[in-house]
Image (cartoon, rainbow, N blue to C red; front, side, top):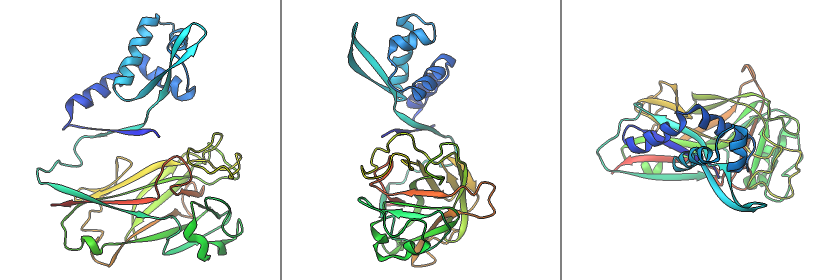
Length: 311
């Protein structure tokens, strides 16, 4: 699984090391080449960029030390070769939007199974898949009301929404510093289409908090956790998205997406925290939604709510 690299002003050595690795046009081109052709070795990189082998090896060491790639020795015709592959999913530079608190904190998290939605409204094409088979009939909206939906590991639809409700009972007497939601998602196209944009929106307590544009419905290679029975010609994996909410506002995938704060959203006003995700009919790109559970796609998780609390 690829990692997110988080950088901030409170870890200057780590941040400087990663930023230094990214400050070279040659290394950036190397990263692009490795991302496009995983499995390139150092000799091939040297040849591709017309570099001495020693220079190519030095660039690879810098990228590896920064955590952007990893290498593995494999036997070759002329002895062992170091094979390169991408390690980082993305790099997130957090400069100022979260001020570091000196107060001790603790974190609790809640795992929401994909099929445990409270409400839904979806349009075709749509469907539900479990670990071993489809749940209900494909392209039938009534499958979303089946009792067997609790076993869902992949949900897809064109426009509409799914609403989940997380109990806030255990944190009602606590001081909440930050909430974060994470989930794996992508667009929904016939079969799959890596170039199929879709504008996907997240609402918290019925307030619009984050809209992101998914670039495509990803396929062409198997998802890491996608079960064997699932067809190769269908959706395989998504991207991991994260929405953070604090006193400074809402930050979706590292960028400020709304000025709404924890207080504005009334996190403790009800007996639950509502998380709604969907595609609006009037969005610029209503390209559908695939939502992945822990046994589908590339990330071993369902929808996760993490709450940072003051001790």
